[in-house]
Image (cartoon, rainbow, N blue to C red; front, side, top):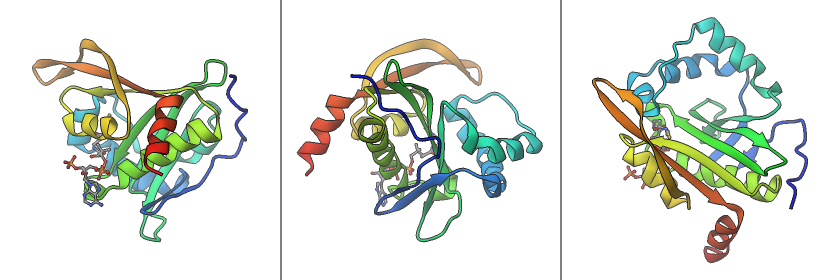
Length: 190
Ligand SMILES: CC(C)(COP(=O)(O)OP(=O)(O)OC[C@H]1O[C@@H](n2cnc3c(N)ncnc32)[C@H](O)[C@@H]1OP(=O)(O)O)[C@@H](O)C(=O)NCCC(=O)NCCS
């Protein structure tokens, strides 16, 4: 079945703990803190360095990007950017997308990341009619892998020694969840 056409406007999603809303220009300070955090860079394998001007421009333009949905994670009635969850490579022909999640250090371990993924998977499968959502997680990041497994992602394989971690190599673990797997889980928790 073909995926449904997405509205041009980026969505806002309400959960019990978090509210996800489109990233905008006011998020640049917080995003800058996240993209320059050494631990976050290590466990996500990011090597590119960004200038502050690039981050400003990125935040200003994020809501206009056509093949991706960049959402800020906010909570507790505040609009502050606590992290971001992104659906990238949205492909309506193949019904697929990839997912990325990163929380600011002080916002971790509160259940925000888990609920953010559940909301975005609902959007992907029920809102947009996608068939598959994939992601890649580094083998040095077992916490994130456990979180993804907890919401239904399945390990499909590895890209061996695809990343450098200091003076060692590090595998990338490939994971995905399909629409019927998502629905089976949603049905079992009703
Ligand atoms: C991985 C990451 C996205 C997880 O987000 P998070 O918001 O911290 O995740 P959650 O809080 O939902 O769940 C993580 C932990 O909190 C626990 N938790 C869940 N709900 C909770 C709650 N209400 N109160 C306290 N803890 C809770 C979970 O059991 C889990 O426990 P763990 O520490 O044993 O793993 C976040 O740690 C992060 O941004 N890390 C750096 C970047 C990164 O690794 N991104 C993923 C790249 S693939």
